[in-house]
Length: 207
Image (cartoon, rainbow, N blue to C red):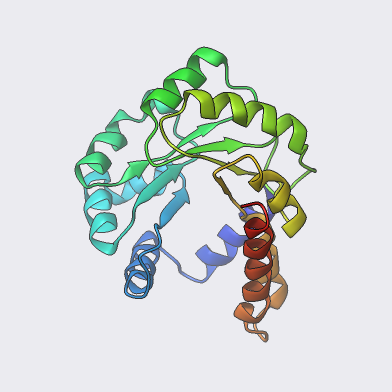
């Protein structure tokens, strides 16, 4: 979506590279054991070198990778090196995913399955918790790994609604918008921190 596109353009303009992301993971890993998943596209990984990426990501402390433009059926080239390095390759399941393919993803999933709550792009539209719940319930019955839900979750209310029936919620564009609104003058932690706490508190009410 446009929010993530703009963030990518800002990062590239500032000189950010994949090595910088891996180094950031290494620094964060010194302070937490919380699992870390990298989300991105296949071209930077391919250009970096698949085996090299798997080795460096593992050494930095990456637990999983979600490559949104790499179909599961074409992922063996990346999946094997990641598995050897102890990193899960997270699969996406969409509302349009056919039942036979969903069953295969559920059977072969690693780490968790990422259920896309709506068709379209990130950061757009409103979620329909009732419709999502039906699909997620069906998926959880056949999945050997937890099911997370993302796309369109932008408020504590959204998180609480989806958290009732999912194993995790994913919030991306809403956080990126907060960071972008800070510009260069305001510390983004001052905005992002309270928002993340509000999401966590909303999820705790669903336990």
